[in-house]
Image (cartoon, rainbow, N blue to C red; front, side, top):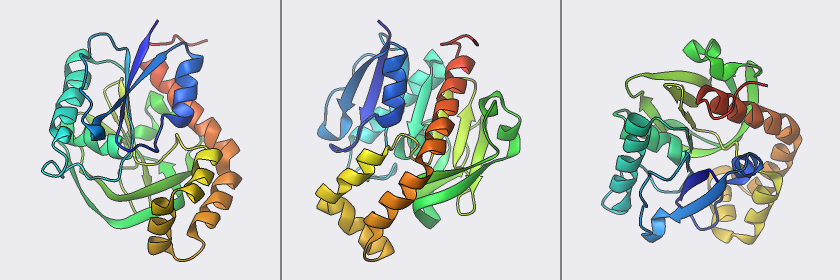
Length: 243
């Protein structure tokens, strides 16, 4: 059976929608909680690497020493093994840093539902096959990719963030937005005081309820957009041949 290595940075987080897609394609998912100091296994047995988001920043190696080993694993995976990679939010930023790009605080944090557009070289890239030129996505980030790694192509941007998505070669996709989130995950934050408090601190009272409603309104189209991204990545990486 083909295997996916998922690198997780928060106890509450999970593979979400992309995990569903991978399981439907017959992959077994192995989750490593890097934030808990769990050992990074040999990469050799794996067919796909999926790196999730997290509250920490890519430059906080003193506070989180495991970040250095994680970046090294991502570099080995993408540069030497050239197998499919998906990075979301922090995972997207780690991909950039691991390959020589630069991440720093964003000029403007994005928390909630925002518009992105396919642009630049990404608009003509095969990753865009069948996708709309614009989409509404869920976001929660205060840092962003400032300088692309060598060989990367910007795939999508938002008004506030120039690098909402990037492609490296045919195998690696990094997305700043949270296309893995589903309605039930967002709703579950009501039981996680730290999430609700952080949202209200940034956006004011009732922020979580507003996000639940805003996200629910876009979910059918968002699911289709995420599915298109996933299918295009798998075809480009030659994991799945076109139908």
